[in-house]
Structures are given as C-alpha cells and as structure tokens.
Image 1 (tube, rainbow, N blue to C red):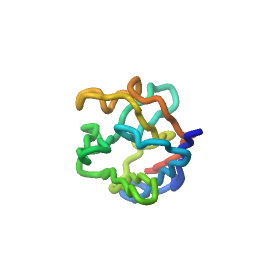
Image 2 (image 1 turned 90 degrees about the vertical axis):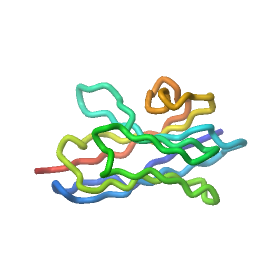
Image 3 (image 1 turned 135 degrees about the vertical axis):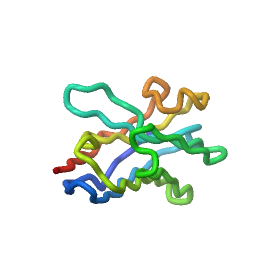
Image 4 (image 1 turned 180 degrees about the horizontal axis):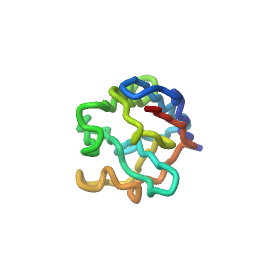
Length: 127
C-alpha cells in the first residue's frame, strides 16, 4: 500500500524559511507527477508546486514563484519543498500528493489529478 508522509512543518516569523519533506513508501512504480498542495481554513485546497517524474519539469503557483522550490531525491523516495521568505498568507496545512495519471502541464497544479495524498503538515507564519 502506497503511503505518503509529510514532515517539517512548524511556526516561523515573516521572512523565515522551512523545508518540508515527503516520504513515500510502498511504491510499485513511481507516480507520473508529484506535488505540494495547501489548504488554509475556509479556503479551497490549492496547488503550490509540482514536478514531473519523467523529466523533472517543475511548476509553481504564481504566489510562491521565486520563494519556493520543489525537488525530489529519487533514490530515497523523498520529495521536498524549500520555502523561503515566508509570508502570513502562506499559513496553511500542506499536503504531499502523487498522481498515477498522465497529467498535462496545465493540470499539474490541480488537486483533481492526484490520487495519492499524505495527511498534511501545518505551516504557520506570524507577522
């Protein structure tokens, strides 16, 4: 059974940094794409960053471009999200996700395309 587990969340002040990690286990084959999503209270889940497994192409939400970096360490079945210059509006529950579907580049930040999810890790940014 495939499992995804996030870690690395916490509380920081504005301008601080955090690195989220996602550990994958139980793969029989690698997902086609993986991503980070977040959901703040009262808001819909939104895609933050995604990466295609085959060629490493990455995509980011406009709100995090230049501040967040997604990466994968294939040998360890790990995925990371380096978050710099954090803002209060980044406060949310962050989820790691994987997709076994074939997604287009314009679908990769939509949660509808992902069928594997972790439990989430909380990120809180105070002003």
